[in-house]
Length: 87
Length: 220
Ligand SMILES: [Zn+2]
Image (cartoon, rainbow over all chains, first blue to last red; front, side):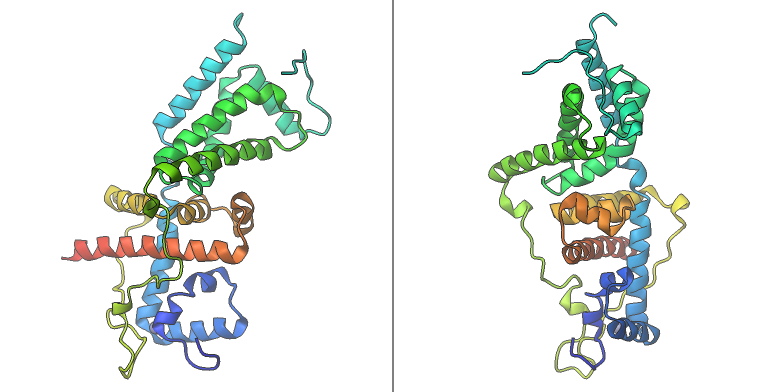
């Protein structure tokens, strides 16, 4: 992107994450905000990136599959039996 | 191998760690289950950064827990228990990753980190008065709240996440699925902050595209 000129939509979509993370220079950050005020397409894009993050958070509950949890607990019982034969 | 009787946990150990180690050595299954619930999702994500698939990451994590249990008597508390467990994990994941790379077609692991994340034909071409602006802008989504979210959307999103290149998948899992902050993710994966953001951006962009494809199908 050229300094001092407007940001094009195809440039903006590549700095959305830097924008959301708050790591852009203040000047560029301000220009992104201005662009979003005037551009429905980019505004929708940024909103969808936020939605994507929110939806990814809903996957948390199935990160540890029950089968895997059961396998690990079975492994623990096997280990316990091997290490404490008298128990 | 050196064997000592009734080793006690040294004073340098964090007392919560010491209690945990004692509980595990005593065979306390509930304590192990809690630890597994708390750490396994993060461990899976870290393993993902080195291996080509979720299935292999699960193998790596299982192998790690076994190594932790069988090595527990050697844990001396010179580091935090968590640090120790994750260092075992990273060793196992790296050697497994190296083996997979030799046996799996490399295309599954390589990818372009500089290509645009949004297809070029969605923007007006150079020469046009509005070059670089949307020709096919994204249409607004009408999504239910997460509680009412259809299983279909979740499974599509899960499939898109599983299909990401290893490092993107690991970063998105840690940041967006598990909610870790950027500093923690850089530390766990050994990444520079800028690199972490690039991987996050590329991963998120692919997930967004998968959701958009789904929404467009639902509209027709
Ligand atoms: Zn725009």
